[in-house]
Length: 274
Image (cartoon, rainbow, N blue to C red; front, top):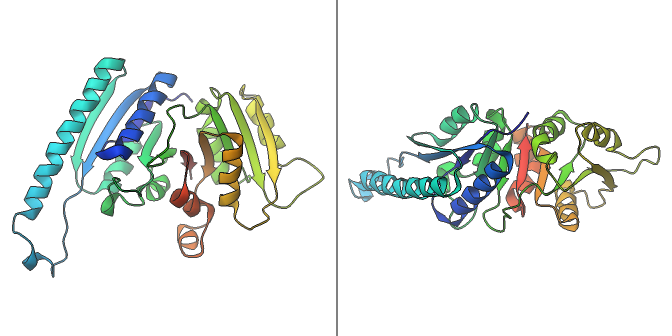
């Protein structure tokens, strides 16, 4: 499957600019169209706060948000004219999770911000990537709020554990892997001298024209997420592909897990599928 339509979260600040940069770069590489989705959440305040705030604060918030959205639209349209990349602008007000879930069904790839940082919309949009990957039915690429490279997908590392989630993520990433300069399939866990873990999936990739190497590291410190990040740095990766929420969301939130750890401490873009 080729990537022909990319949906990205359009918002203010440096993090919003980073997503926009990556979106246009990927669209150019894959010959894709872009859909910029800007969502303004209605301001909801606890009843005990209402008596202590100005009566028109919600109205002022919406007015300011709409004005900011118009500036973002103008910037994106100017970029469309300069690059020739077809871009559709969509603006909505309401529940950001429900709106993104709906629009994600009509695209090939969703780009979101990490969800933390000084200028990333928090509150309603916080933890949006971790939630949306469960409902979108599409791969979600999460861009760190700082340090993202424009050349996403040149050197890719794949976290592989033979799970349903990892299988879906790897196959969702095939259009990117086929254009990559270097791909590594990484397995983490106990050593097995009988075979090289990941060799079978590397063979599958080879049949798609992807020259991937298989590697394995022992999970000595009990933190697969840390091992993935370390190996990604060592490989010079600009994209990490993983299955998301291999355990239940509640289990990983309470007791910890790879998905949660990667989303919290990510230093390079992640492509996640569930």
